[in-house]
Length: 188
Image 1 (cartoon, rainbow, N blue to C red):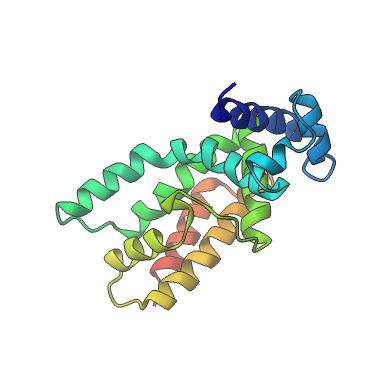
Image 2 (spheres, rainbow, N blue to C red):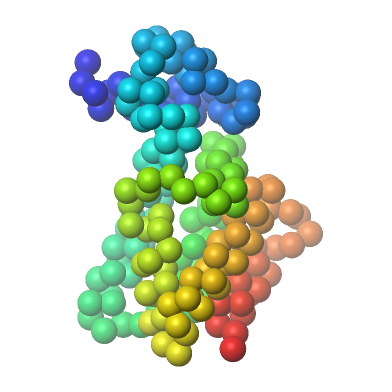
């Protein structure tokens, strides 16, 4: 069996176990066993449980944003600069879609755990880092320094992920979140 098949099997089994039992209750041993693989398979293919989860998040979430991000990149090449509400929509719309489904909710909780816990996984997708988002915000708000744009995004992503990871509190509509985050990113 090719290595990519083994990696995908581990990701699929891990996601199922995480959905059933939650992050803390799922061990590397349980993932290897449920996948019918060697007890060291997760460590061989990923290095650690956190690295497996990071790979799972990238594999499952990058496609959610990829088309829209490709369009933004192409439009920027043509001289377009995004507005702050467009940037907020770029982030919030896919997350709202994920929050409507139990597997999506799991992915949001895992992503929030990594981001809010200040874990630094080795992301391979450029969109999982702050750099491209800083560039986009500075296109919309050129007066912002890189550090200022980074601080705003850190606060915005933290709030957005907390909002969705908590299961979208019913008393705060998504539109209120959008408006609040846009105001924070755009504010003076």
